[in-house]
Image 1 (tube, helix red, strand yellow):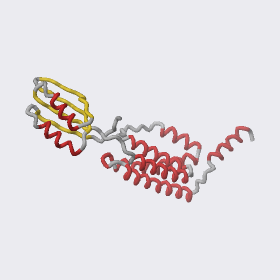
Image 2 (cartoon, helix red, strand yellow):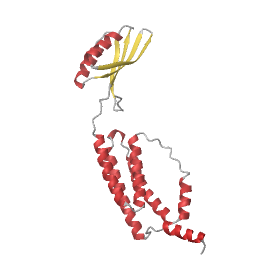
Image 3 (tube, helix red, strand yellow):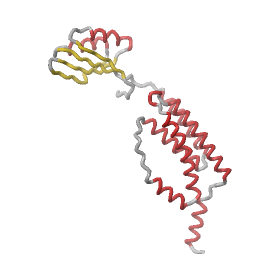
Image 4 (cartoon, one colour):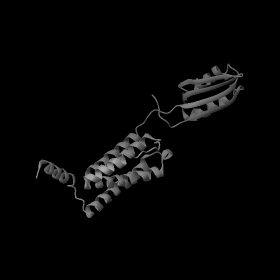
Length: 226
């Protein structure tokens, strides 16, 4: 037996040392399914209801199980593993991910599938515990309050100072983000921070100005820059 045959035999034996009996495959897939269900429930509970997507959540569970099956298949044969790598290399995902948190859950699902397929369920269990606690704690860390946006349309060019004085009376922070003047009409966008109990009084005072045509106060749940 030459060196080439010895190397080939040693490589194949090392590659296929994982127990691929039907019973073991069923057990691994069952464990993967349990973790897939856990990820499904974690995504449902930890994700904001505004951005929750049931179809995406179902796909997370499916990706976990599918990845486990792929890893099991790769371990069964070198030829199959090389063919699968080539087949998967042509796959392109073009669906835009709207929330950064979705990427974390997707990577969690793929990683869990790989770990379970490799027969290391203990690591998947520790990962699930640590990641769940981290996401739960970080989600409840207080952040700065998002500013409101006041949009005002008024007649004349001299109304800005009057509106700013009213805003200054009710808000500790404000800044004029944009102003547009045309045909004796003024449009202002003012970013401000104001307490909820003062919003109504401020809007009534702004709307009561004779030159104000309309006014709107918007609140958003986006990221806060401090």
